[in-house]
Image 1 (cartoon, helix red, strand yellow):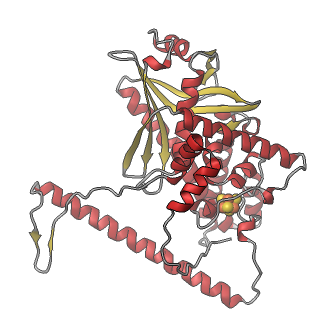
Image 2 (cartoon, rainbow, N blue to C red):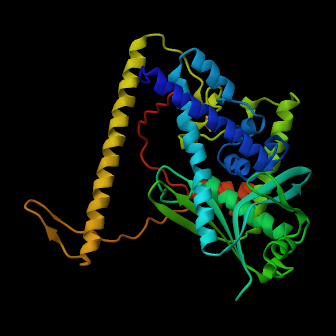
Image 3 (cartoon, rainbow, N blue to C red):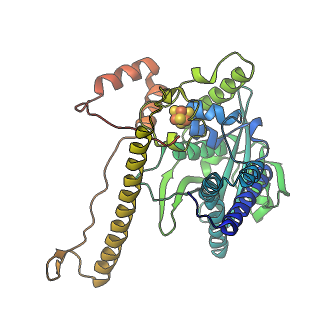
Length: 404
Ligand code: SF4
């Protein structure tokens, strides 16, 4: 429950309304009408859950709008307003960071193309890639670095497959469309900087130097830059991959045609495959209330709800505690590093401590492996191989609780 201070709540409601209005304007200016094409973030989502990607494309699901904030305000429903506000803060944080990163890159004198748009087509499916940043230099070797910016609560250990797929799509379409007049760029106000140029023409127009006509003569890499409030990590390098581009195109086709079939009444959203098992995406999904994954029976006794609320409160406390422990440990590690005496134990009255560097865990990206195998040996053989190579641990009970 929000505090009963109406003036404070009014201020937060104003903020939520402004953020929603700004977000709608920004999306219209930079990305246009997203229902008219498949974007890289759609493809990234489609790789994780096709149902969610198609529902997004159809504009389904509950989303707060300026109007909903106004009506919740009239009903004094500040809890819902606050929830919408926190969601917007998470969603828009990335844009704020983006302008800070732009300033940093410009201070370095880097040649940057920002929000470069590539318009592509695959079997009649309109596809657009928007590149946060493309850094370009012509000497000593012609080079392009694509940077995809992600703002996260905490820096992940390994990259989510949705982010990787997004970047592979950008790299793939850049190379495939290199010499086609399909590159557009707008400034932050939505004014066209250039339209319908090839990539070398765009570089020549913006920075004044010629760029190779063939992407094979250029060193091209993609990186995902993950930024949390006080941490940063660069994941990469990723290089253009024909196989990953093919997978992106196929995913775009499934999203586009899937959405079309549902709007024409030829299919039902609940017949679209969705991600099975426990998936963090479901906790933030706008389509979870109608998702067949969570169909169930209603319990009317309030005691069940109370028990679940208690578990949720305890989990929040646990998260807070873990957060506090992690911050303390970070300070101790920083202190240890400042001593400049690697591997030496330091002692207090009751403890000894030292901080050492450990090797990172090596894991296999199953989505990437599966896509690679499908392209090499076909779907059936891939699934046979994966089935015989799978190893199963002992079954265990897992309690799944999610707020509706
Ligand atoms: S709730 Fe989960 S499974 Fe259902 S559509 Fe959303 S992401 Fe997919």
